[in-house]
Image (tube, rainbow, N blue to C red):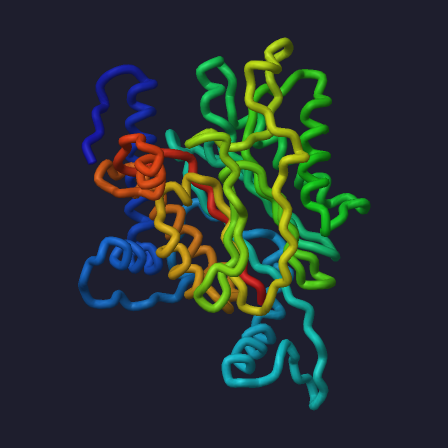
Length: 369
C-alpha cells in the first residue's frame, strides 16, 4: 500500500483510513472461515488450511450479543444434546443422574457488518444500516433497518432514521408489556415514537424484526421492504421473508417526510408489514441481513454456509461465520465482473447492469441450541 503524505491533513486522514480499510480486509481474508469461503465461492483449488483454534483468530467488526455470555455455562450440556440427537437418541432431552428433563431451546447470536463508504462504525450502526439485539426472560429479539440512501441528495443523513427506529425497538423490547408474539407491534410502536419527536427525524428505511419466544420455541417475524431473513434446517430453507418492492430497487419503507412534502415521498405504513409465525427446532440457523448481503452473495452459497453452522453454540466460532459472510458480500459488491443477484434481477427487468452492488452490509447470525 502506498501512502501519500503530501497534501492537506484531511487528505492524509482519508489516505490512512483507506489503508486501515485494506488492512482489515487482509486480516479478515486470513481467518480460516474467510479463506475457505473465498476458495469455495470462486472455485479455487488448493490444500485445506489447518483449522486453528477460533479463539486465536482476529476477526473484524465483531459484536457478540451479551446474552451469549450468560449461556456459556450451558454450552457443554447443549453439545451433549446435539451429539445425542445425531446418534439417534430421542428428542430434546438431557439426562441428569438417570433422569430426563426437557431443556428449553436457546438462541446464540452475533453480528458483523461494513459501511459502504467508511470503516468508521459504532455499535448498532454500519453506515446507513442499523441493528439491535436484546433478550429477556421470555424472548430473544433482533432487528435490522436499512436507511434509504436517496435522502442524502436532500441533505439528510439516512442513518439517523434507521438508527432511531432500531434503538426504539431495542428499548421497547425490554419493557414489561412487550409481547414476543407481536414483533409487528414493536415495529409500529417504534415508528410512532419516531414520528412524535419534537425535532422531526426525516428519512425512511426498510426493516425486519424477529423474536424467538423461549416458552414455545416459536419464531415471530415482521418485515417491510428488502431486508429480510432465512431459516435453514438440514440444508434447506424452511422459512423466509418475502421481499416487498414497488418496482425494481424501490422497496416498501417506513418514512417520515419533511413537513409539507407528504405526497412526494414513498411511505408504507406499519399495516403493510409482512408477518410470519414459525416453530423452531434444535439446530436451526437464522440469517437476518440487509440487502447489501442478499444483492451480492448467491443464495445457494448462503444456504451452504448456513448448513455448516447447524449446532454451533460457541459464539466465537459463530462470529467467524458472520465475519466471513459480511466480508464476502463486501468484496463482491466492489467487483465489477461479479454477476451478482442484483444484476441478474435487473436484467430480468430489461435493465442492463453488471457487477456487484456497493452498499452497507449488516449480517446477524443465530443458531438454535
